[in-house]
Image (tube, rainbow over all chains, first blue to last red; front, side, top):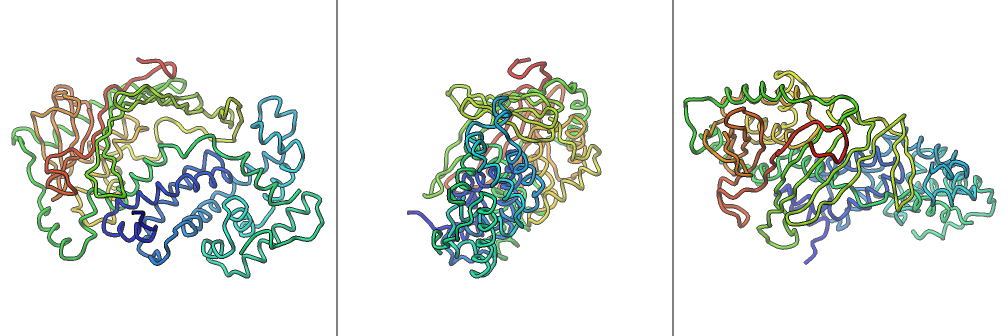
Length: 190
Length: 313
């Protein structure tokens, strides 16, 4: 038997410890996402605060929703936005990374491979300059395979707003990559 | 190249080298306890009727078995506070070394399961000023020691190793002793009251449990620990058991607080009143476990100052 997230959260209203199941199901992906955006120093904080906030608010969770992932990523997105300086610094460092620094062991080899092409550095800089709301949308889609409906649920915005934010974000990312071909929004399924 | 693909590649490159740290899990689970004390708070959420019943039963915290009226819990706690202030304090370039034994109940959540107790031995070296590389070395009962580095933060940069490669991150040094905790008893009592707020457990027990949670964490300066003990000494309902053994078998005295469900005990050396550790014991049968069963324990075997990480004082 595998209880749905909604069932687990319902059970946690009576037995608080049951909320640990939610942690065990989602901590890895939430931590990875936070780590990518704000780095090791702040990821742990952001994720801890996310779970504690979720725990406090669990009475208001719509128990008919079997999947708590959008709800949790929505809370995490707000936690990340409160640490925007760390995120900014992270992308700034990536944007500045150059091959010479790679040789000094300044950045990870994979980052080096990306940045050496110039694409990674350019896109990091573009990410840094996106409005926070647009960045949330494009990263939930690109890094967590969210569909439009899940993004809308996570961020509490309308489907149309998801589309327009994604479109705007991708236009700027493409511009940063020197790609001026039209955007095919059907690359991402709604 | 497609913008989303470049973004995905960047994402992969930014991935952490391992799973979410165990420390994060502990922090969240401790937080669940503090927000609505798990093991302690679960009965209080069931409904108004049982809440009322619990309130009646726990209105007065009972005397622990073996309690003697000759020495008071408050006296022991004040002595413990004096003792802990004698602990060596690490210099900036040294490490705080703690060797401890932790027993925790782990449970299979998908089935009715009374769970099993897992014992972990831990050795931790924390850089006093946060600039040097620390170390966590731990093993589960019978297993081999596993080392996890705690990279220090030097000149605003911390260096991580991932798959044999190193990379760096901006950082601010995290001193071994937390700097955000009060060092006088009154402020500490306020802090513990805030930590324990929001649950329906009796006020004294909440404060006691919040203190026990804080004592389980590392990163307390002797002054903070002393403030915790002095704050607990003001609780009239804390009880004393004078002739007990701690979870590792050392002869001890115990100061306890209990609710209808659980008893939380702090152990101190019988002679010196040095803090030894703590445990939580069931007060009545529940979840397939019996009254008197230990739910968790955490014992400090050694607290010392070390010159180097990995060096056993």
